Structure formats: structure tokens, C-alpha cells
Length: 152
Image (tube, rainbow, N blue to C red; front, top):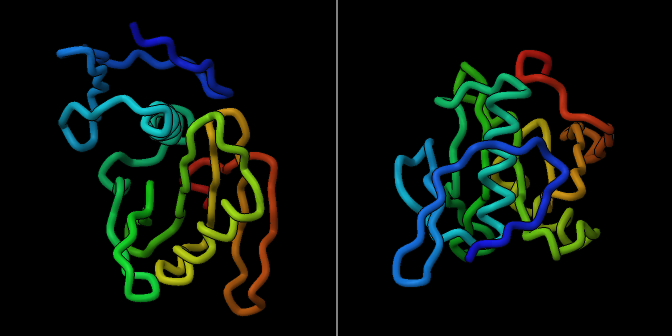
């Protein structure tokens, strides 16, 4: 039986199913069932948080988009666009047992060197780190709470 880690995010109703001892969660944005890994549990919660609490438009959220970094194919967990089609927020999700460390931040920063989003968020569902990026200075301004979409 699936025994989820309680996260530092509001509880949301999810469609959870099990088939041949594999647990799946329905992804409402991609309209498909995904294997429910600890990282997927965090990703699905954070997406719901963006949409329901922070008023992010569903249509502007991209999940697991591809990018090429140092000639290697990578995937960013969540990328949010503004209404003009510019990359606004890059989110890196980790399983709850993975600590948000400098190396996790560095991974997101490397991905964002390609994306050039204005914001970065890191989450393991328990801890959340948010930073606004000053691309001209190459610096980050860390904040406690992610603003609502219309304030980004």
C-alpha cells in the first residue's frame, strides 16, 4: 500500500491507482497516469500549490521539458512561462529524503543558464527555496515565500 510522506504543502486530492503492485498518480496537466515515485509525489503537490494557491495558469506550466547542457540531454522538472512566452520560473523537485543543498541549487542554476528564467525554486516537499535572479550581476536574491503569479 502507498504510504506517502507528509509534505510541507497543503494536502490535495489526487487520483491514486494501483496496478500489478505499482502505484500511479494521475497528472492533470499531462492527462496521464505516472508511476508514483517520491519525487513525483513532490512534483504533483507543488504543481497543485502553484495552480490553487499561487494562481499560476495551468496552460503556462511545462513539466519535464528537455534541454541540452554540455552536450547532454537533461530535463527540467517544472518550467513556468509568462503570457508573452518568456521563461519565468524554473523549479527543481527532489524526493523528500533528498536535502536541498548547494549542489541541488547548482544543478538548478546550471539548467537555468540555458533557460534564463527570472526565478528559481527548489523543493523536496519539506523545504522550499526561492530566488530571484539578477542575470546582469550574476546574483540571486533569496526570498521566504514565492509570490503569486501576477506578482512575479
